[in-house]
Image 1: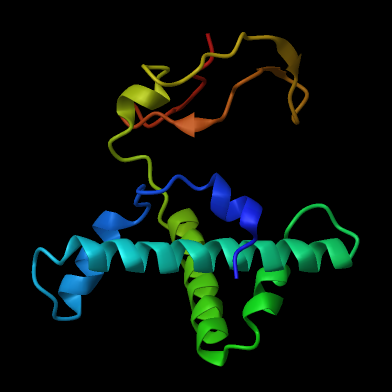
Image 2: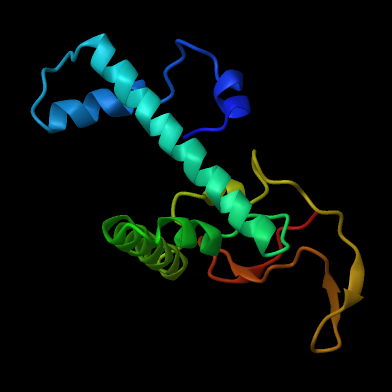
Length: 157
């Protein structure tokens, strides 16, 4: 069960996952507007599960002489539940695949204003230094191709 200090610190009556739980209940066949008591009880169960899992992972990290909790600590905690461990492994793998796909398909379309130093991009102060080929290069010279002229340009001031 949850440690008393964690339960006492949690504000009573505050729902952490109300919107998500309402959608989950509706997806599993409940009414569009479920009873508030049902949502409250499920929210308390989910919150307690998260708190207990985090405390157990923290204890496992402490027993391994670490101050930081790592992903392996959470894997150890849920290793007794094969379904939960399988789902966790599946989601971690899916996250890695999405990161790789984002890197692969990272295009600069729609960022014309940002790549030219527009709003949202910090400008670097230009300083002269020697480039790889021995010529003077400016700091911030990222060698990006200008989409309008097809030439390599520097966006530093």
